[in-house]
Length: 334
Image 1 (cartoon, rainbow, N blue to C red):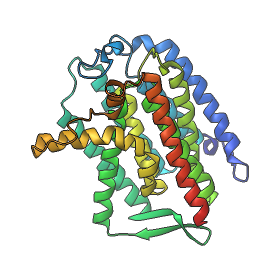
Image 2: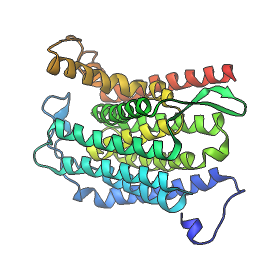
Image 3: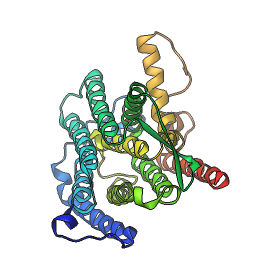
C-alpha cells in the first residue's frame, strides 16, 4: 500500500528479498517493543489445573498484542494488499483484541462468550472469502495445467465448512498454548509449510500477498520466541494464540483448506482432542480418553515425564516430519 501511495511500482522485481527486508524490520521492531513494553502487559495469574501452571504466575502475558499489531501494520503498509487482505487483517486484529481483553481481565471470560465471539469472526472471514473468491476450493496437490485444481461447491456447504475451519483453528491453537515456545514454534513451522507450498506449488502471480504475510508473521514470531524460549520471560496469551489460529485458518482458505489437516496436525491433536473430550462429556455425558490427559502436552509432561523442552522439541520434530511427508507426496504427484 505504501508503495502505491508513493507511486512506486515494484512489479517485475523479485519480491522475496523485499519480503525478507520487511520481515527483518518486523523482527527488530517486535523485539524492541517487547523489550520495552513488557512491563505494561497484564500479569499472568497462573493456571490451577495445568502442569507447571504455577511457573507462569506473575509473568507478563498478552504479548500477542505487540507482535500481531506489528505484523498487521507492516503488512498493510508494505504489501500490495487488496480490500480482501485488509478485511482479513482487521479480523485478525479483532481476534487479538478480544483475546487481550480476556488476558487483562481479572476474571477469565466465560467459554461460551469466547466461543460466540469466535463464531462471529468466523462468519466474517467466511463472508469475506466468498465475496472475494466465490465458494471455490483450491486443491494444491492435484494439478490442472500450470496450477492447482479449483473446484466450486454450493455456497451453503462452503460457508458451513469454512466457519468450522476458522472456529476450530482459533481454539486448537489457543489450547496448545500451554508450554513455553510450543504454540509459537509450531506456528512458525506451520506457516513455513504453507509458505513453501505457496512458493513452489502455485503460480507466483497469485501468491505474492500470502507469501509476504507468511514471511512477516514468521519474522515477528521469531522475535517473540526470543523472549518466550524456556524459561520464558513473557507469554503471548489469548491475544496471540487466538489471532495466530485465525491467521492459519485464513492461510488455509487462501491456499488449500485440506492442507490445514497435515500442516496443523500437531495443533489438532494437542488442542483438538481436549475440545472433543470436554464437549462429549459436557453435552452428551460421554467420557472418552479417561487415561489421557489433555491437552496432550500436559499428558507428555505429567504421564510420560517429558520436560518442557523435550515436549516442545519433540512436538516440533513431529510436525516437521509430517509437513515433509506432504511435500514428498506433492513431488511424486507432480
